[in-house]
Image 1 (cartoon, rainbow, N blue to C red):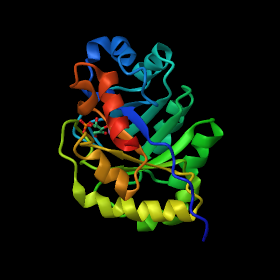
Image 2 (cartoon, rainbow, N blue to C red):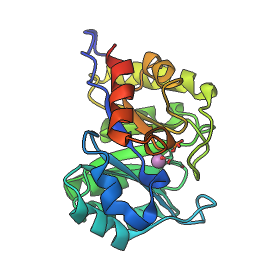
Image 3 (tube, helix red, strand yellow):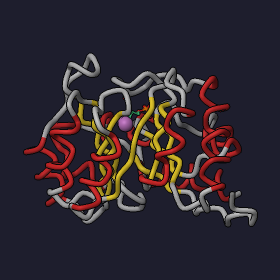
Amino acid sequence: MNTSTPSPRTPCIHPSILNADFANLARELSRISTADAVHVDVMDNHFVPNLTMGLPVVESLRKATDLPMDIHLMIEDPDQWAPQYAELGCESVTFHAEAAKAPVRLARELHARGTKAAMALKPATGIDQYLDMLGELDMVLLMTVEPGFGGQAFLDLVLPKIRRARRAVDDLGGEIAIQIDGGVNAETILRAAEAGADTFVAGSAVYSAEDPDAAIADLRGLLTG
Ligand SMILES: O=C(CO)[C@@H](O)[C@H](O)COP(=O)(O)O
Ligand SMILES: [Co+2]
């Protein structure tokens, strides 16, 4: 166990383009120029009951922006697909623990392709069984809604899991990011931050605003006081 207190990570805001105008994605990306990364939700209508985009669209998005790309795969068989997203030059690729057959091997395959590896847990999936493999990851994503749709209400029942993850990450030196995704807005973000999250996905809170960059600044302002 690490006995020194790790210094807190600078909070990051990753807007999700799920609530953006899909007919104008390049323009929508230009409206979040102050984001730390763009969060891209890939859904296959099997792991979740919704369908969004796949490799060709993500490849085009990659060329349309200089923002780092945070790919959230809500798909079956990420063991097969996730490495292909890594090869597009995405900053991070997140697979779901519930879908991965060999999460440790998959995390290593993502690293071998030069991408950060992240693993997501649905709200009802416990973290304890994954603590031993946290050191294989750059980020853990704790879903604060059931994955599949934007615009849902933040689930406070995930807060104890965020606290548990924070303790485990700090024991490892604090370098692993703790991302939350779902229902993040001006009313909920501080509860998640106080529990230990440091990376915040916000979809509707950013893209329902008239000025998405201003909405990002507002969320950042709440976190930095
Ligand atoms: O992964 C998902 C949904 O499954 C998210 O990334 C949502 O797109 C977040 O949207 P809001 O809850 O912030 O509206
Ligand atoms: Co997401």
